[in-house]
Length: 437
Image 1: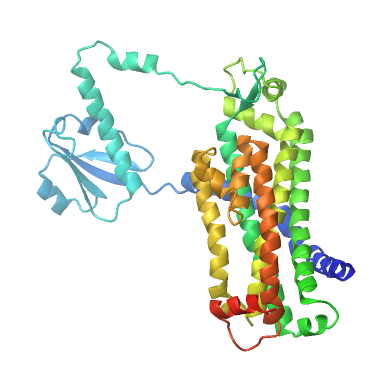
Image 2: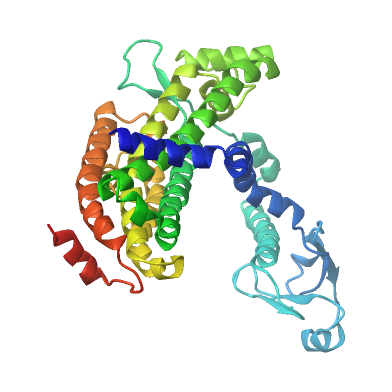
């Protein structure tokens, strides 16, 4: 154990003291936020150039009612369609509306002079659909029908309470929107950790093997101890990074956010945190739930405590396999083929996370959060939904027991692979190595 401790300390110090660790620890949360906001930012800054659309309306119902916007400008044409297609090449497209459009909504054709986009086509169709719906409403001969419809349009905001948690007047509140966002972030972070830190172990083994450092080290330490020290050392770096992020988030949430929010917002968020129903309609329930979650120390401790356990357990499981692959090859290129069976379950876990968010209590969600190869990612996507504690404990027990079994097989490959050079082993040969005594 003393030798394993020395190896853990060496691996830990080597990585923590690097500038890259400090930079990624500080910048990763910022990059995650930017990654989540990127689609919205891209959409807001990616408005296309203004496009002129010539309109030939044979029905006489729609042409005059099409509205220009930031990207579309409609110009009514009084010439036949064939003539317009030949003469008005200056326009982006010619829009033709059939005379029986009210009875035949498919009688719309767009003749573009260059490539169109789905967004442009949907924008045009949306305007035409609105005009046709207004025309059909006129058939009911109700005076001011559109004004009546606008007046009765109502938006409902619903608060959800966990009745199974408490039958008292103050029950636990739960926002599916907040849980979905948090679950998505946590699952994606687990996905990144397993791939990045697992690959880090594999690359470290390959480098030391090529430098013949391993041959010197195994003269004074067992291959199993060497592998475990490397895995635990890198795993400690991953845990430290999660702890730093947890402290930052909890510090900002409990110390900074309450001073930035107005008093009435914090009062409402505190009431929701204590299980009271939100009485005022001035605030969005999901927004208030988000503020309550960010400022709730107990909730944040539960999230980051679970994250540490699953990050460490998932890393141990996959790092053992990555270390075995690294010991069996001489370079990263040769590792690609053997690495594929390891990365596929990680990708599967991320894909299953999408399905789990739709129904976090389904049988599919339960079993994929118990299967050790997908449980770290899938379970972290489920935890924000406040699932039963016994499911979390079961997932952790199976995960850590699986690591114990898997590291035994990985060690057999590792002890043989670190002395093998010049040949990329096949899966059949790896199986033989695992059977060696």
